[in-house]
Length: 235
Length: 308
Image 1 (cartoon, rainbow over the protein chains, first blue to last red):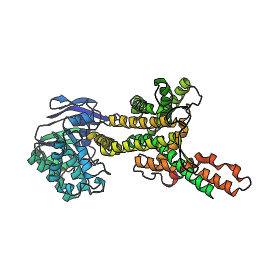
Image 2 (image 1 turned 90 degrees about the vertical axis):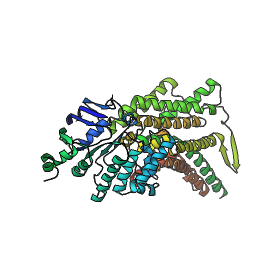
Image 3 (image 1 turned 135 degrees about the vertical axis):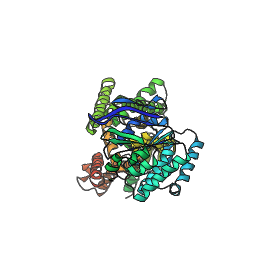
Image 4 (image 1 turned 180 degrees about the vertical axis):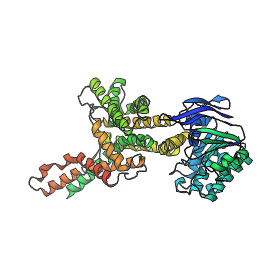
């Protein structure tokens, strides 16, 4: 479904990603883990057309997307739930969710998606008129993921969804991803520092280290590998 | 004593009317700033072009000046979109200082272009449905129809822009862009188009203000500066990016500008030797800048400011 072929991204001359290739198959959950500054967010932003790719190509459903503008990539069905959530703080929960459905043309579809998100996150329904910026970090993360689901994405990309959340809320966020896997056919590409929980959820895993893919494999195997146990889990 | 009462009433009425025009001039500036954090120094030149549009097309097309207002709006919108795609879009990649100098350059360009093509002679509309007509609404209080029409159309324009921003899908996209452009792009919103839209709305509203203004205010290539300065003060007072703020602050500044005549009237009443010759009203625009300065020091975010 998504194929990133040897992309290199530079920030003011310095390579942040070097010849990175990843593949995400339809219906799967793929995790990209790595330390802070490894280039995980840059990878997702490159897919979104938000940072320029110096070389390599990105294909989605058989078509090249690395020359497209961000809003065109969104219209193709890739939704990015950014690091730090980037909610529209002064706007209400519902206004934020409806902005997530900006590319949805039919009113009926919009309403259906809204009902689905409210059913999935009852807390958002309770607070639909509240300014989203006044909610707690966990609730904001729910709103961000909910907003991402408002256009029934083909590929949902989550950037550090557990960042800055209390441990209890972290499990709640991953529980949400698990529900998405069970209920729908959403394909998920997740980038996480929280290696253990992210890999437990994923089908396939990549380890990104200083801008390069270090290893990859079925998530359970990667999780059990010495490399991961030593570098990330401290075992 | 009765004299003073009439003077106060007159000042308040003309202050309100003029204030609504100031508000309309400031509307475009605050919309553009709100969406993309750019201060358009050429704003007054857009106004000047709106004035010339009405002044020139009315006799050319043989229609009343009022009927040329949609045309002025169209010219303003086109000018805004052209400025955005031809210049501003590129300035956005540069530092803040480049943006300042960029719109400043646009101002100089438009002003000198007008000087070249129109000459420096101040010109005003001499005929039309509105020109020279007035209503007497009370003892000594006269409403000029030119100013009344300008005030009413200002309210209509504000209502339209408010509706666009708060009640339409494209308005919500505009708000999202102003809050977080990158975040808005992740929603599938084309922020390029939203920026262009802000420039179109900004250009159209200020050009319409120009078309109304030229009924009672002479136009020459340098006319923009005074209005740019007043618009800056209005936007600073109301809060950068706030439409409601521009409305309230415009009216406030209209009133402030018209307060000094009250003092003159009081001075005449006291009739203290020599005091009446001071002509305090000639300092009215000084008052505006004094208030602009005060706001910047005391409450930089303005009355209704929501941007940092």
